[in-house]
Image 1 (tube, rainbow, N blue to C red):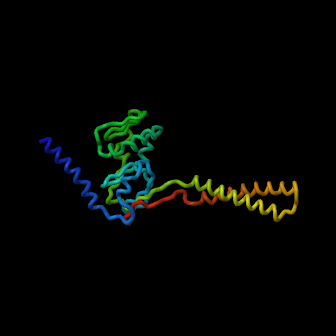
Image 2: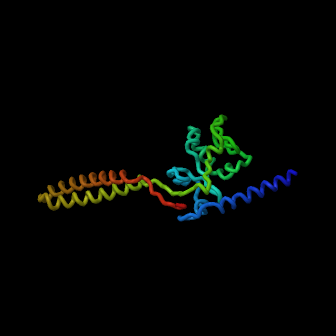
Image 3: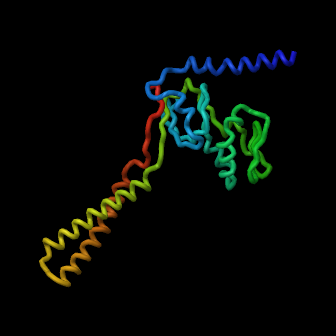
Length: 219
């Protein structure tokens, strides 16, 4: 009886995935397979049902669902958070199906159902790796921070413009010559550079801090 029951379970699991995919809504942007090609640890914004988009760390996707890291549960690891994150990112597909195995890194141990730090259970694996069913996913956006690069670029542009303005003022407004002209030019260029860089950085800081791109949508 056991071999027959095992074969029946395998057939049930094998047939469930195509069935779930067949009943999934048709996307207007991208394909579900695009999500399956994302690299683990990619930052995404996922909209489920009528709720607003939520920031998630992608771990993997199969034809029936997308799996993301629950950062609130991850934070319970405290100083061991990095070790736990690396275990999950590297082995999420195995953990999600409940394979009877375990992974150890530093003080962190993760088995098929439990997460331990320094020998103490802090969470269930199902709480750490969150499943979002394909039928419920409305939209997925890629997101990346752009604040640092934007501020640097805007500062450089502002500095160049400020230096140019300072140089123009020294040549047209102040009519001294020789050493006097050199002093005025140097002072105005430096002042213009500093002011321009500050203005550019302020403008960049006020802009949205992330670039977002829709890679999947059924809206």
